[in-house]
Length: 189
Image (cartoon, rainbow, N blue to C red; front, top):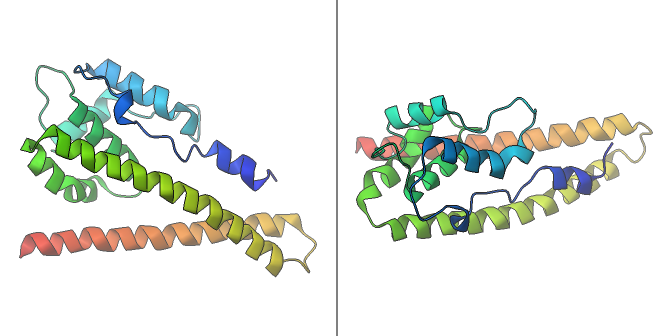
C-alpha cells in the first residue's frame, strides 16, 4: 500500500482554476476546454476520462446552469460557473446543481466583481478544507492502525481505511443533499 502522503499528493486537492488563470479576454469553447484540461488533467482517475467536453458545455448552457453565451465566447464569469459545476457534478445531479447555483445565475447581472469575490471565498475555503482533509486522513489512518494493531493483515487496514473514507464521503454527500433540498423549500415559500 502506498503511504498516505503519496496517496494525498496524487489527489491534487488544491487543483482549482484560479482567477489569475482566467484571461481577461473572452475565450472560445476550445480554449475553455484546453484550460480545464490543463488544470485538471492530473486529477482524472482514468486517462480516458474527459474533464470537460463541448457537449457538456452546451448542455450546461441549454439547461440554464450558466448565463447565456454571447458571440460563442465565454467570459470570466462563465469560467467561474463552469469551475463550480465541475466541482459539484461529482456528487450532485444536474437538477441539484442548477438549484444550488440558481441564486448566482439569476444574480449574474450583478457585478463581475461580486461573483469573483464569491469565487475567491470559495477557493479560500477549499484550501482550508484540503488542509483539514489531510489531517483527518492522518487521524483516520491512526485510528484504523490502533483498532487493527492486534490483526496481522495489511489488507484489513487498507480495506478499513477505504470503508472509513467512503463513510465520511457519504455523510458529507447526504448533508449537502439536505442543504440542496432546503433550497427547494425556500423557493416554494
